[in-house]
Length: 595
Ligand code: B12
Ligand code: SF4
Image (cartoon, rainbow, N blue to C red; front, side, top):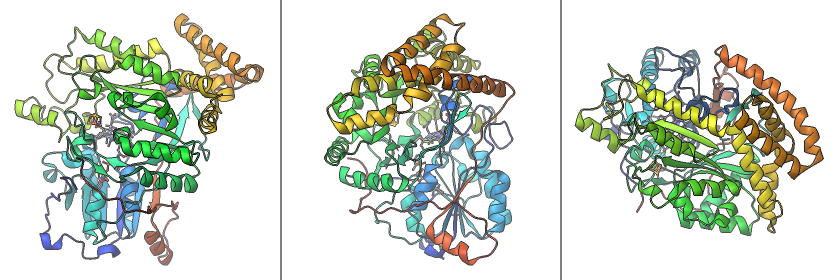
């Protein structure tokens, strides 16, 4: 086990009492911070910091073309799945929901998961717990725990840095060495694009799969790596390809999925495990699709046959910036890598940083052009931000270049607005202009991400529809199913939308012709039918956005079996969706640090 998991906190318990007196009989509430999120308020919500991935930091200026979607808070599900005590999850509550929950229901422990920008919300939640449920122990975890002096800002009993599974097991007197149980949870909900709500059909939404947390690569700015011990460290939940395969089979069966969102910063870095998984998929004819994060260097170390064989359909890859000195990018021609991946149907989300040490107002144009020239399906731009706990933060702290909270609140330090430090070359808030400029140029030159995504999917279908291996062929057929009708209609609508924009109209037109050439008369008939509907929806979505419409996640409430058993005895409890959360794997997965 790596460093971390230490209990800091204001009311440090003496060592002899580091187990809760009720042990596994303690009633636990695990909660995310409260919403609404996409609005400016005194608790730290910000209009430009919605609880969404794409709209927040990827397609934020793409208007009605932006992919809108929420993700459940995975940490809460992972923790709940590994707690035997009665445990309720409250995800994305309003402040009122949260207050009612702690006031009207008995809890012995309230655990809050948060990131640093949401400190103000955690502070408020702790105060409400003290007021309405004074006997409860407050435990706070997640990235917020890296914030210095947190115990002086919030009134919590325990601030847990690092892995919460082992912390909770120890605290509740449960078996610390037991295999990690994986939660059964879909990766997203509420997906919407062009103003159309996408149905959550069984078999089309991906399930979440979390093989490990942390990352041994240890880039200087990376919170994910830092929280779990930094360079050389990570925590593996599943060591072998066999274990992963077993977990995936069980998720496939229970959730009826065939695609997985692998939330592991370096799933492919663990080569032996990934290749064993490939072997098992081949032996058992599994045509799964995987969405992964990967560094460019690691991706390049696999052959395209291996990537396609593993079912990689989507990859999140750090491009960081031209001439950045990150080892993960050494000797990689990222532009040609992106092109190759796309030609095999693999969608790429490229991630670039604005504001590296060598970025200046004078070279910014070139830097943005370079990023845009990748023509990735999606492009995230983020400000170079020293987050607490990272080596970059420590360097700025030593240099005295961090801005104090009074000048720059943590709530604004979310990477989509301003620097939280004095940059050597970029001053006067110009970073915001550069950031928005990067998004805009990517959108104007390359077109909507939806168009690019569909283009890549079509390439994949064209390349693999006649592949000799049925396992591969099946996956591409599954992936391409919406292309012939709905997606062709989306291209038809986008082509109409861009009729006054020569270059983009030409791109959409070429893609539509490619569709017609590939799928023939049926698609020629269906595309305008779907297309007219999509165009009308897009127009009304644009109007709605102009009027200031905001998208917020609905509140999710989930109980484990022990909590449900309690519910059944007590009167007046509200009804709650019951997920299957526990899943043991055949062989114990030890949790250990990296070599
Ligand atoms: C999924 C995700 C999201 C999702 C969902 C967020 C959610 N509600 O869960 C979305 C897309 C909405 C999102 C948004 C943002 N995110 Co985000 N996100 C992630 C991501 C990719 C994965 C988090 C995850 O689920 N990991 C898997 C779980 C199992 O790991 P974990 O959360 O670390 O949990 C473990 C421990 O931390 C601990 N733990 C966690 N909670 C608790 C609670 C208790 C009580 C205990 C005891 C322990 C504990 O135990 C868990 C098991 O080991 C991380 C990067 C990463 N790879 O970790 C960034 C990350 C968490 N996000 C980050 C940021 C900055 C943001 C945004 C501000 C981004 C922005 N501008 O683009 C917004 C904030 C939106 C808002 N209004 O709050 C930062 C946080 C940095 C920091 N120092 O605080 C991260 C680390 C990415 C980064 N930049 O480095 N995010
Ligand atoms: S490779 Fe990615 S996840 Fe790993 S340390 Fe670097 S930025 Fe973080």
